[in-house]
Length: 204
Ligand SMILES: Nc1nc2c(ncn2[C@@H]2O[C@H](COP(=O)(O)OP(=O)(O)OP(=O)(O)O)[C@@H](O)[C@H]2O)c(=O)[nH]1
Ligand SMILES: [Mg+2]
Figure (cartoon, protein in one colour):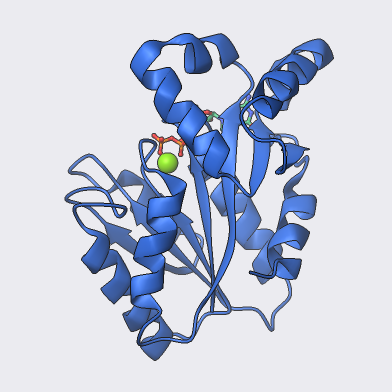
C-alpha cells in the first residue's frame, strides 16, 4: 500500500487533480485506489463529490492530519489496509499542512499495515505566484511546503502565459533544488500521466 500525498496551499487545484489522477491510476484494473481527504471545514464537500467517482473515500475532519488528528489518520490507513487493501492511497491534506509531518503521521499508520511512502507532490498555483510567495506568514508556509516536496507540480498552467510558468519555476527552484518540476493542468489533462508514472515508479 503506497501512500502519496497531494499537498499545496488552499485552492491550488488538489481535489481536481486528485480525481483525474485516481482515474489514471485505476485505469489499470489490477490497481486498487483509495482516497483520504482532510477537510478543515465542518461540511465534507470534497469527500461527497469524490465518492461519486466510485472509489473508497475516507473523509477526516476535526483538524489537520499532520497534527490534531494524526492518530485518526493513522487508524484510517490501518483500517483501509485491513478492509480494502488498496495498492495506492492518495491523500489530500488541508492547504495548510506541512508535507513532512503528513509523512510522519502516515508512518504511524504503517505500524500495523504494510505501507510504503510515495512522493510528496506539492502543487504550486501558477495563477498567483506573487500572492503565495511574497506574503509574510503565508509565504513562509508555502516555501516550507515547497522545501518539503519530492515533486512540484506547477498547477493551472492552462490559465497563464508560457513566460509566467518559467517565472514560477525559477522562483520555486530557489526553495528546492532537487524536486522534479512538472507542468500540470487538470483542465487540459496535461502532466497527469507523467505524475502517475512518478508515483508508480517511486521508491523510498
Ligand atoms: N484554470 C484551471 N483551474 C483549475 C485547475 N484545477 C483546478 N482549478 C480550479 O481551481 C479552484 C480550486 O480547485 P480545487 O481542486 O478545489 O483546489 P483544492 O486545492 O482542492 O482546494 P482546497 O481543498 O479548498 O484547498 C477551482 O475553482 C477549480 O475549478 C486547472 O487545471 N486549471
Ligand atoms: Mg480540495
